[in-house]
Length: 117
Image (cartoon, rainbow, N blue to C red; front, side, top):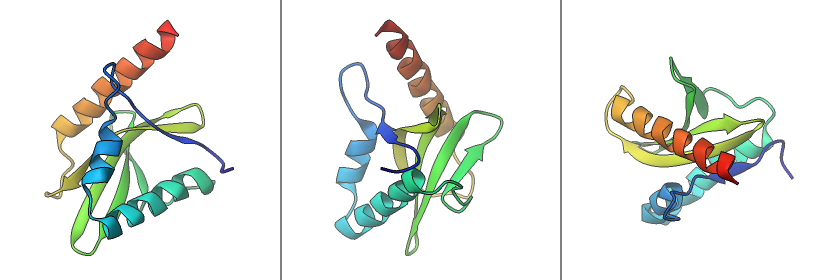
């Protein structure tokens, strides 16, 4: 068991955007992403190369490079564990504010749903 647990966010309708993102990747790239996700679980201190806070929000991005492709999976901390919301193939230098807002919306939904349990 690792230092923390990485969970995937599910929508109210049970959709899992991270799973859908992973399934759509070519197998070699998927293996690299899964390897990086394992680092999130196992390393006490995660290098910025793989996990970086997006300021000023409390959303973080898991950063994966594979050849000339760059992928981002957005998430947040829930205690010491991590909840990942969704992933993208990054096409520009700057992380899209739309994607950050989407992650924030998912976090709000996650917290609301969690309180109801």
